[in-house]
Length: 123
Ligand SMILES: [Zn+2]
Image (tube, rainbow, N blue to C red; front, side, top):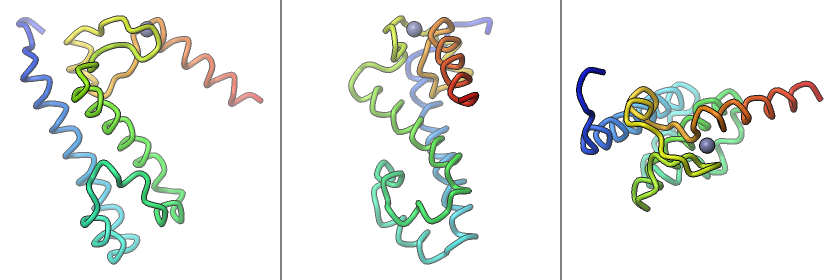
């Protein structure tokens, strides 16, 4: 990245990612159950992940996790905590956030987190 990314650009990018993930999720759900998809559109988008009927489709879980990430990032933005590592509160760079607007951890904590995850898989 040869120039500085502004805060406003980051916000627009985060909102675009949120919009995109929600749109895809709705599209997938429409294929599975059109009535439920229509019902979900009546619910505020940040409450979708807690919508109980969705647990009937385990294959939606990866997309639900992606929505949870985006919800968390939007919530942090509103609280003025966006871009801070959720473990050590180090500031992430704007370049890192541009590449992954839902990023939650700095490099060090990310590695620790993945090691912990990997450990759980082996149990
Ligand atoms: Zn950290």
